[in-house]
Length: 196
Image 1 (cartoon, rainbow, N blue to C red):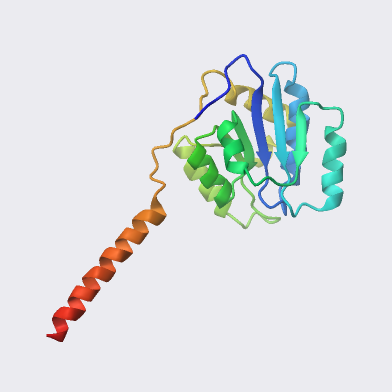
Image 2: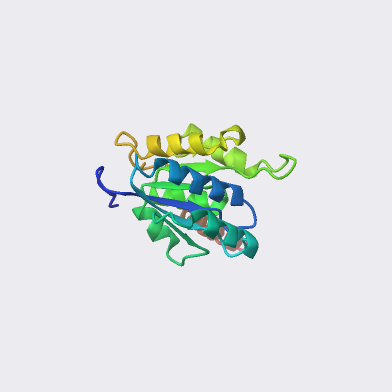
């Protein structure tokens, strides 16, 4: 996996999955980018997701106008390969995004969605478990402030913070198929034995 050298522009990917929730994270990232562009030269590629309402998409474009380091797109078919080349991922903590983070080993800041009444805990549980394993850093609600995110981006992109190679076994589908095949084989043998 190729990463950018320390003296080059950092490549930061910001995403919110499908885009139905999380626009506040994109706005925060745009504000933080403006605060750090002199201290930490970077390119920030923002993916809004195909379901982000058009008025929010236009608002984001306005917020980023004049920021040559920021590109905003709705979607890319090559998200995983772009993530592999990134120095940092900033995202929601959805299942697919977290699996992409684990697959690529990119340094990651994640913001778990909890719903209007903080009742949806799936992303929070996932994010906290991954943080315990040292795979991601979690952005808490009280940290949704441009200066705080700016400082965390700088720390994450520092020379001491390299991409991670998680020690998690990501071959769950392959192993599950092998177990099922084995069980079906034993079942067939058992059924054949009973028939005699």
